[in-house]
Image (cartoon, rainbow, N blue to C red; front, side):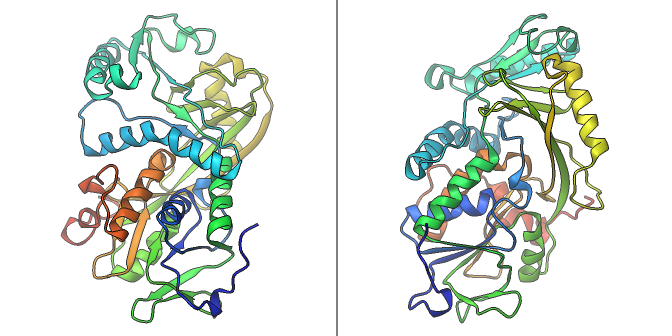
Length: 391
């Protein structure tokens, strides 16, 4: 049970108010609290109500090809995530469902076989297998056919050991518990603005403002609305994704599969997640029964062990995607005390802890463990560098 706190009558303002209790917002709160800051997280609905509250939990690396700072950043994040999660689990006593599960990629043409043989060679340079132990190898046709149907991989497959998975909802629950214990987390509270001169976070419904020295906007795709209010620029959009959860008893130790544009991810609790789709146009955020059945049929076609397993639940949500594709992290142009962290899209869970480390280091004047790629910074997203949504 966290501390009982009257925000309206606090003698001292919060060092940091965070708008949004998804994976970025809660990870930033965790890092801020660990650095000694007084933190309040303000969530308009509930923890994980947006795209962070999904089912998949796939922590998958970029291909070891055309290496760049973004790929290096994600690689380092995936290397350090297990230590971060084990610390969170120790702090809270709550399991996050993390496991280094590995991943299978089927090879369906000779071109793909040749391409991934090259990637396997490059992985020796980029992934440092002698130091990290993580490998990226091409295996012959028929390999691992007890899990991936042999006909789905006629030219063999890639098996890489860097990939991992986490239970998104369990991870959020643990982060939320930590923030409630050591800071303030208020649900059902929508941030509408921030008066930097007065140091007041404005809330919807004429609620008493929250005193804070700085604000971080991290509310998923809806963060783009608030960012536009502060900057006058629209730099991102939402894309709908859908996933499915099946009963998966006995499959807990199998690797993840990426095939036919879908992930199959076994979880520790005896379930298997399938997903996810990506739709730029959508009419609502609700799951579609037709799309759910499509996911099930496509997955069972290349993964026969899923046949006959019951559907437990279906999920859909709107994921934040910056128009420039890379996440936005840092101080908003024209503001001294307003920051943003959003646009993680499909890689948010793998990089959130490292994004948080970078942003809190910037706010506190320290050096992050891993430098933030230039393409993540506000200069890349705003002004003359801005890309329109249909660009």
